Image (cartoon, rainbow, N blue to C red; front, side, top):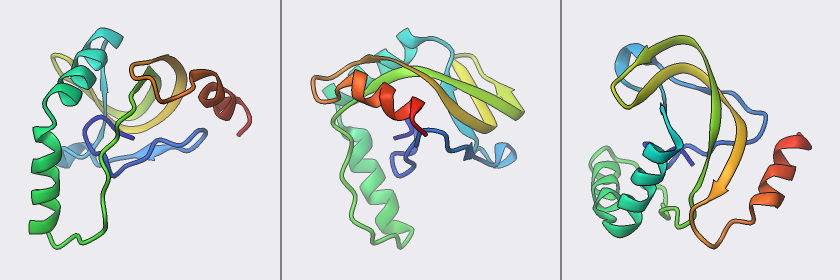
Length: 119
């Protein structure tokens, strides 16, 4: 799932798209350490989940939502219009390039990597 928009699933071989001009581009951190810090913060303080559920309800989105409990850090390819920020980037297009580490016990990193190469 995306680190900022949990309703967006990153799929192997599939291009993610976003509208950079309206703050809805595909977000990526500059370093694995920053992504790890975010994941650990989310796991320790799931307030962002509460806000997301409230925001979805206020916007009329009634689809069921389960927050991610597993986090993997990796690298992505970004292209199209790309905006640089202090801690990361917001891009028009992105794809998964690598899966480098599982931050929680749930995901089997080797089977996830295999999914990347078989698509």
